[in-house]
Image 1 (cartoon, rainbow, N blue to C red):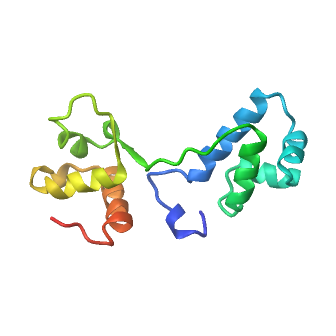
Image 2 (image 1 turned 90 degrees about the vertical axis):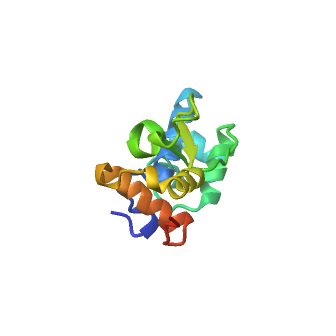
Length: 145
């Protein structure tokens, strides 16, 4: 378990783990060894190994150096919630056909706006965990219903 409290959510992997996987795949696609990629990035090979493992304690500057060395650019977007994984939230988007994901802030806004349509007793553990996380992160601990 991570020592960083925000990283301990049960329903979401550590974000840097996905980034590390992406960087490893890019390095391998370029045919570079870890030593070659680390040299290009100006970091130690051991640091690149930690980056590829998605270690959350590695400085973002090291991640950025690795990305630049591999010819990648950061693309910062709001976190998304896949509707197929959360039935109660999906019910709230009945009038928006074709939408398969929402920004997290928008998901919380839907829960709050249409709380009277949510069947809280039918929420599974993962959807409850999602809602709790959204309330903590974006609602300052308060579900406004």
